Length: 421
Ligand code: ATP
Ligand code: MG
Image (cartoon, rainbow, N blue to C red):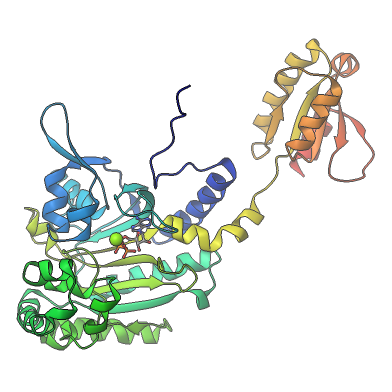
């Protein structure tokens, strides 16, 4: 006998209950995006591999180790998107949406990284991402932070359970000056570096700061900090953001080792971190990427964004949200064949006049006993029962499944009234 085919490691099915609470979580987040007047953008899940290499950077975890990349039948090298920013920038340049314009976009969907699966880290995961273009001041950084904070409150995440960390990566010149000093420092601590650290030392020393290896992390604390190399403008940008956060009562911690795992960031970077999810504690990460549009061939356009890891956020609020899931309203029980079509007609009318009601029709026949069992299992509040009498009288017998109320015979109008209560 052949073995059953299994899903790919790190790629998961969502059972209906999980899918429903995820959908409810998404709805709450989208409501906040609507309040802030952000627009949805959809881009393909597959792009040319080159797009991710050029934007995210060759010497990053994502491009070095995590890409799902393949050659298609026409000989093109393609990749499953590991993140959203590259595609949105590509689409913006290609369609002329960016130059001399302000844009506030969001997207939601699956992303792919071939990393070691563990709780909160999957090979197919979902992000809600936001990208903004054409705004260079710290005010848009502030808006992004305030909006994410509003999102936590909208999904019922207690403010004690997430902390905001911010940092500034400065601009190109400061980065170059810092890089030199950092390489010097790392060379002096070569014995603490792992293979990866040594490989990155010259190619991308900033990445070494992002290492998850404890031995490497131990020397990171004393490494030269980018924040000490900022020029006046970047410094002012960062200070202004901090003053605003303070004025608006947003608590945050400046974390000088926060560098982010992608190459394109500059100036403000931020993460929302929780201690409730073990090592996979970052639920949202973002920052500015003012040089990416030019780097990708467009005209200079300031930009900033973030992405929320939906599985991680979901696991923090799943229980509360599951408690909000509502049962269906009614289950229709047909006692004989004539009642089936009567039922379909009646339910069509009800669905028009009580658009918020969820009613399940018994399909597949069955005795009254087995139909009532299905009604119970459906979680419905009411069983709507019809046989020859009800069909003749254009009525329905209503049985209350969750309470002790007496059963009733109702006309169509009375039933609609009851369902609309
Ligand atoms: P990490 O340091 O945890 O690997 P990252 O810096 O690679 O995160 P980003 O590229 O910033 O992550 O992605 C934004 C968010 O998406 C993360 O903060 C996290 O919540 C989520 N995320 C990233 N990779 C995964 C994954 N493999 N599985 C589930 N969620 C993920
Ligand atoms: Mg990662």
